[in-house]
Length: 304
Length: 307
Image 1 (tube, rainbow over the protein chains, first blue to last red):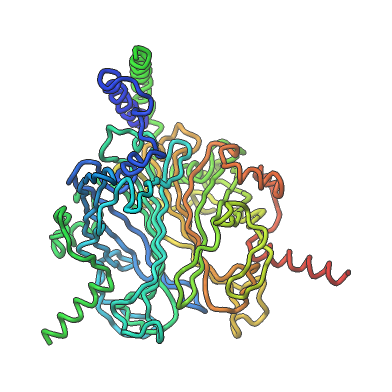
Image 2: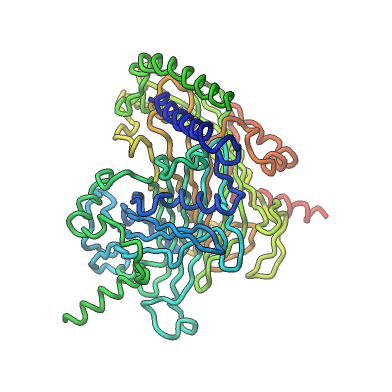
């Protein structure tokens, strides 16, 4: 089987070699995308997150654990999690800035019982002893605001930051977030409550797949996603000191069928719009767990 | 042009032969994750090698941040780490496949501006210049385990591997550490100071490689390692509230020499024994960054007393 896989890999290479020998002619440069070239760097970045084909759907899945950390006690395994992001990209061309792409996506993350892996609907908070309702992550949309081009608005050339090692390649994305909390008041700088988290993701692929200009949608891509944040709003922890740590592993998958249970059934039954990404021309503002929480709470207050 | 084409054809032809051979051989050499002995072999080839004494090297790189209430998390250092290990395995009449492993581990703190290993660090919260103590644990731990206990009952986890689309993905768990701090006093339960950290590792490998009983080691394995802990002792943060966290990615290498020059140069110059794994009968006590820091500070204090 392994030989089959490497066989397929060699076949792909063979096909590429054939195309270039018969067609465009033998320029070594065109054989593989060049990470130091801004236009190729853009394509590499797009391949790492999406498909090069306009509108082709790409699906990510991941699973892992969610833990508490609060001073004076051993960290607790509070939940298991299963998540997915369904996306596609639009391709753009800018007269000055060159080719570009924009991702539009929807995302779900479910909180599961750490023992049984069942979807949680309520949770007994061990610190407050209160039974609270669990609000799963369902963010529609999670989009890039603007397309990313080979050259920035200021003319800066795109760079593809990645580690190439032993035929493998990976990217490391880290976003330390600290901004106005949509659930807090108008004086956060004075009395606290600012949103505070860091999101971290590693994406791994094979160098041969990634640099091959003939492969629009890489199959063998795995990922690891980590998040450190404040308590989740629905935990009702208020000002209590502590934080949440998520550690997960996952991959790009071919189809909704490949999702693990209970995520697959839950999406079909409870979150059916998440079976497809938003339209390519979606201009709605992004949803986060915090803005989503606010919407849910506000609509409940109105109906009451 | 002709040359490229011929090479491609040759590659295709070369491929056809092993394809046929592999089909015949792989059926009986495929490891069964539900079988306790095979599951142990999977663990050994994943973490180590089925060739006794063969050195196995993991390398990783990433970043270390601070997390302090009320401010954006700060990038303090880039980091690169390495673990070199060796194992031996044997078959016990009652306990089945057994193995023991021993390793050495380093992690270097790198100045994000210069890209060089940091020797001193200006602590932005205290304004003090402190000496950076690199991680160098000899050994970070050791383990010995068998597929079964002395009564012959299975002790390894034989539940299905987490397979997805031809890949084995592991992770999601965490080592939640909370124990008596070797640098703390004798009344930690009462006044605090307990060691408190969490480590988590995820990894991904092609399923066919994991289950290939004909391969001694799992060569194609990428990892992501993370850690959340209290301030590092050498930061001299005392009981100021806050944490540090590490986020790194890496992989199993085929040899020590495959590491970037920064790692090799620093190890050769300052940590030369970390070019090799310790011997299998190594008896040195397990080290952590906290025990190493304590030894370092004790030595420095003794020197100062002598002066």
